[in-house]
Length: 127
Image (cartoon, rainbow, N blue to C red; front, top):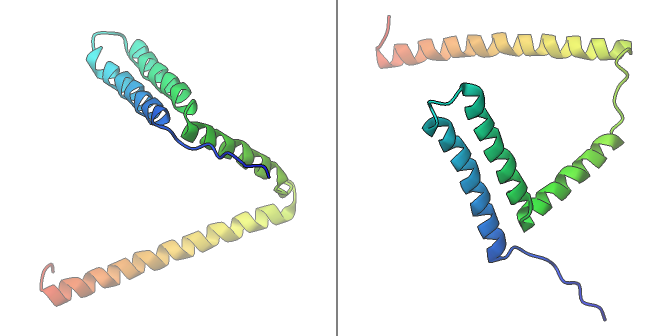
């Protein structure tokens, strides 16, 4: 009988996540604290904090699990059969979606106007 050992989060993983968050916050704080630096350098500090925080965060159990999810999502995305862009049905579906969105926009605008007038009438406020 073989036992499967399931890896789970440890206190070290929690410390890694807290450290990653601290690095990101330090990068953001650096943007404001280094106000005398040129703007491109300040943004570089923010990007460095985000990058380093991401690297540290991905070393934790939760980060590894997240990265596996991203990779499996990309595999599933490749399995999807996408419509051909040149097909006439693509343009038709786009046009139908546009018309439905336009109709719903007008409907909700009218509903908002009617309900607003009703509330003003019931509360005695407004015109």
